[in-house]
Length: 497
Image: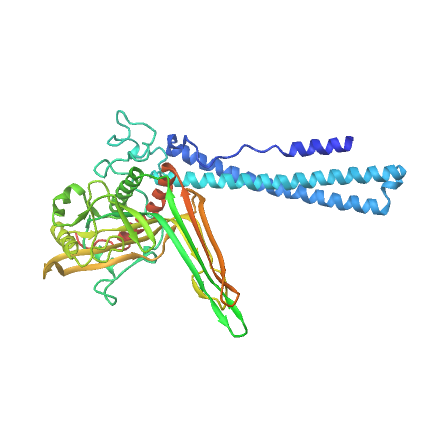
């Protein structure tokens, strides 16, 4: 009984867990840049301690295993029988094995708890890193408080606070800009490329060296809210009676929990950062107020706008005060055969004596997997899947420097090309929970030959998020994309004032 009591007590003691680390806390928006940075350091220490605890627990588990083996050897060789006869043999064997088992279990449970704590700390660190970047915080200036904390209030002025404004209340582009985000230490040519005048033309980036002035004629951000994928394996019939049926699979994923006010605020913040990043790269960026009158000839669209592309659906936004418009070739808002906006774009460049760009940026929230279309010779299954991962999947723009325009709006002298992102920019930061809301398995039917004829399966999933969580991650990945583009200006410095 005392042995059993000892074992129960030991097991109860092992059930005590360290306090859980919440990935997101409701007080996170109250943290200053320095507090976020300090907590990042705390998470690094927790991660290091958890790794050390895992190593220690692994040693404990190994010791328990060794003790159990030793007890078994002692039992078989009669060692315990030499100390107290038959009762000593039984009691010694049970007590030693019990102690060894408790030691081994203690070690294994310690390993599990340490691994879980490391996982929680890593998730918390990832969220804090996204928060740090999205606010424009810099390690070199930990006392910085982002300007978007209060719309129209300068940091340090009367009425300014140390708490960021709620998502959806970020200042419009005419308010004080966000702090400059340092440009990345990378080769932007590995991320963006394009040519002027067709496939064999000069590289588009060369145009950036020919003018110091830049006008952001458009800044379109498409937030994907619906993604889906399909797979099909076609049936086959082989001589001898072998038959495989057709298999179809489809998965749909919808984003839920983020509203238009938040998406507009994210767009505004991304535009403000982009302006400051271009300035940091040595460019003079014309403001919306300087170019507002030049949009009279553009055919504009309401914002936000529902947009589609193949199986994708989303909502398109433009910064407050900057019209939303599309031109020929824009995949999310193609203007058909109309040349109106293309010509107006060229005219805007000439009127401002500046390089005109109009980035179109797409933020996706899911990575879809599919076995694709195949024949039943190799497989009779169709497989689809989805993984939540925020990314900038597309970033493209025309680049126009119009010195002379002829023939109804065509750039006759100057530069006219395009730039497109070569690789998507991903983040593993958690921002949503994936939940299945519907699954329809139509099963199978029998063919004329008695074999499996066709089967179909369809799943509908929801990616549930919240406004602050989505905004933190979206701001971080957008920042990575725009600062990489801005680095192109540094790689191709000005030679014309």
